[in-house]
Image 1 (cartoon, rainbow, N blue to C red):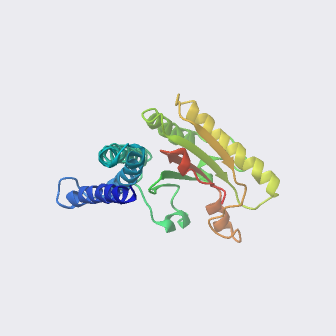
Image 2 (image 1 turned 120 degrees about the vertical axis):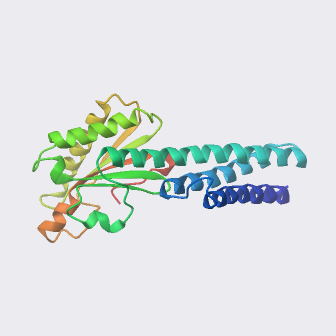
Image 3 (image 1 turned 60 degrees about the vertical axis):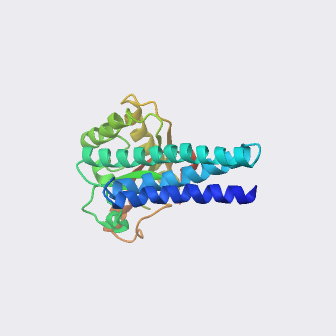
Length: 243
């Protein structure tokens, strides 16, 4: 049985790699928006093959189930990946920017909004200065408009899981900043849900526990004051934004 499972897994992975190879030949343009799609397809195919290969009766039945499982799993994985890629690009366009995965972008004080993506989530980072007045938890008009645009797009993706995290600098006590960061995350969440979305929305206040730069200067403190919105296709991919 183990040999049959191994063969099924190998065939599944090979088929997904061939799919990726086709992209290089012009059938599908190989571009950043499709990276997560291919990753999701491969992961889904492997998972489907394992389930199929271990639930059949007899070697022939297991092989057939493995191939069917790989095909269905690959399609599901590719669909999730494409959905996240699509959301990243749509949100970036709506916010007047592009998708930028450069880790140094977060350290550029001129960047008020940064949309990035990984293989498992999309992240939208808003600088605090454009979001709230000093010590306030009420969204400023421009920020409310920006967050509202995200809410309008999420109406098309009700299965996407939303996580919102507030971050502060270290001015004041940890407890004060914990409350401030929580309330700011909740303010953004309320604006999103006010758009009519049905998504699961989770919030977190991180105080100053996850700094982007040492809180040793006015410039660095401005970098650390931010709100981050994460979009997930699977709850198992959710991270702790405060670490």
